[in-house]
Amino acid sequence: MDGEEEELILHPRPSAIVAALYTLRDLDVEVAVMHGPSGCSFKHSRLLEEDGMHVLTTAMNESNFVFGGYDSLVRVMRKAEEMFHPKLMGIVGTCASMIIGEDLNRAIEDSGVSCKVIAVNVHAGYRDNTTGVILTLESAYKAGIISIEEFERQKRVLEAATRLEKEVGAASRSYIPPSRGDSKIDVAKRLLELIRTGKEGVCVLNAKKETAFMFADIMRAVNRVALAASPSSVPMVNIANLDSNIGLRKIRGYSARIVDELAAEGITIDHIIGGLDEYAIAGERAAALIRSKYPTCDFVLLLGVPHAVPLSKYGIKPDAEVFSVTNGPRTVQPLKWLGHDHVVLEIDLHPKTMGATGIISSDFGDILQKLSR
Figure (cartoon, helix red, strand yellow):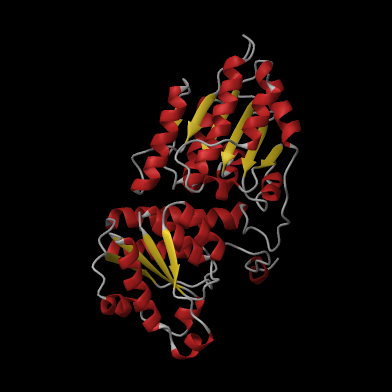
C-alpha cells in the first residue's frame, strides 16, 4: 500500500458531530441545540436524551440550505431556555449549517439567552471524529468552563487515541470486516479452566468513559469466580484506568462509583493506571506493569479497549493466553491480527450503558458466572 491508499478508509467511521454532542454531555451541558436537519445524528441524539441531556434541532430544510437558518436557531435557543431553564447550553453545527457559513456566535448574542452557551463549529467532514471533541473542549475553555491545563491534557490524550486507531484499531486498514468474535461460551469455559487449575491471571480494565460500567461487570465476574474457585486458584491481579482525580467531573464520577461498587464486594484495584479518558495512554502503562511485576502470568484478560494494551511490545510469557472483550465489531479482527487468542464482543454495549449510574450486567460476565456454578 502506498501512502495514499493507507489513508483511504472505506468502512463508515464515527462522526465528529456525534463526538461533539457526547463531549457536551461530559461537560454537564443540559440542553444541546443542533443547527441542522432534524435527521442529523438522530440515533445518538435520542440516546443522549436518555442520559439526561436534552437535544433539540433547528430542523433546517431545503429553503434554509439556500437562504440560511439563522432565525430558526435564535428561535430554538430562546425556546430551549424557556422550556428547560438550563445553566449551560451547547450549540452544535452540522454539515448543512457550516457549509453555508452560519454564524453561531452571533446567533447566541442575538438570542438574548441568559445562560452560558458553548458554540461548536463542527461538521462531519473531518477525517478524525476526535476533532469534534477537541473543538468542543476548545470552546469550553474559551467560555471558562474548563482550564487551559485541562484542555491541553485532553488534547494530548485525544491525539493519542487517534494515533492508536490508525495504528492498530478500526482505522488501521482500508476495510475491516465486522465480526461478532469468538463464542462467549467457549471462551468462558477456557477462562474458567485456567482459573480452576490455579493459573496466574491479570485482569485489565482499560475502558472508555461510560462503557466502563459494563466492562467492570466482567472484572467483577472473573474476580467472583476466582474467589469462589478451588483452594488451588490464585486471586486475580486487577489493573484499571479508574482514577477519580483525573478528567471532567462527570467522568471522574463514573470511576468513583465503579471503584466503590467493586470494593463493596471485597474486590480491590491493585494498580490504577489513569482516568477513563486516558485509555489510549493507560494501556501502555498496563502493559509495562504486567511486564515488570507479573512476567510469569499465565493469562491476561483485557476489557474495554484491548488494542491499547501493547503486550507484544513489552513481551509476556510466550505461552500466556490473551483474552479480550471489546464492544466494536470492527475491532475484533484487528485484535486477532495482534495475536490475541480469544476475542469476544459485547454487542450494543454503548446504548446499554447510556444513563447508567452503576455497574450493569454484561453477557460475558453472566455466562462466566453461570458456567462456574
